[in-house]
Image 1 (spheres, rainbow, N blue to C red):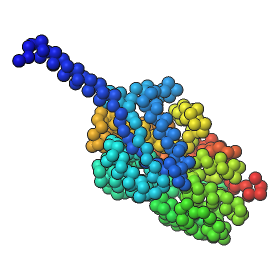
Image 2 (image 1 turned 60 degrees about the vertical axis):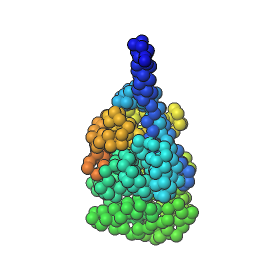
Image 3 (image 1 turned 180 degrees about the vertical axis):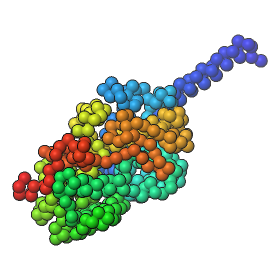
Image 4 (image 1 turned 45 degrees about the horizontal axis):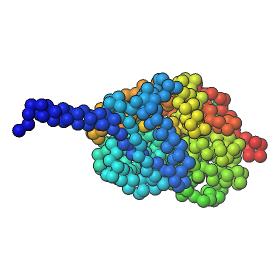
Length: 422
């Protein structure tokens, strides 16, 4: 029979074990799975997104005195979970929807992640998020703009970026204001898109809104994603003689298209791009002066730091580490992981349903973001209601905001100079 002292000692040992377990729990790692194209045709973009994720998690876990207005900049992990640190578990989907789906299942089943973030390519986001929905794990999408992704009645899917329904509408609002304020009348366009989910949906929206706006579509050309040559497609565009080519391409295709435009002498008044490859850092690095004058829809621009100092503060950190500025893609990804961290912190739990409920209740004001948005607040479909788009033009190798005109950092250059006049 144990003496009173022995029983007290045993109780003390048990208490120590419990306390030790609590401390260990408080310092646990919160594993979030991230699925991006780290190899394959979009590997350059995937690396930029990974850099943004790594920076965000470093700020959350270790702090940053340079960004005092940014949530979690004091460091020390997630206060709602007693300082638990975030650990990102990476998966490479190689721009392949089937690989994305299998990696989502692996991360959930084998790595036991509490949530997923991904996947940049809309068609991969579609398949990977279906797995998350089936397995009841929160999935946050920061970049994919295919409008149909938030039209599936999913319970576990959340998207912070605006979608193509808004972005394409912005194009035609831009045309309207271009005529009203700059006396430039766009009457004839050609539409050029890669043929996966994102490009196909964008093309359909552009054709629809062009008809409603009374703008003629001289040609609407789709090409196989990751093409090795675009000669016949560009010849079709050239024969249509458009004022504007509206293009939706990922990086490899965007570079190939631009080189083919120059080779075949296609020189419209403007190329109006739907972000993606046209906002990748490699686009300007590879093309040099041939990248100039392109206008692309965007969600972020460094010159908007005049309106929000957080943009420059966080960009300076990114530049000091990676020797490149944020792009719209990487800025959205940075924002995505911050939104997920905010939800997990408010949930004060790693339980999937608690995190989902916290995401539903998200309400982050615009002055806590590096995006030119009013904030982040999800509607019943999981779509952020407070996002908005801008248009940027490449001027002297840098992206400058040119629309909305009241936010413009540079006067728009229209038309583009002909290839032999640059």
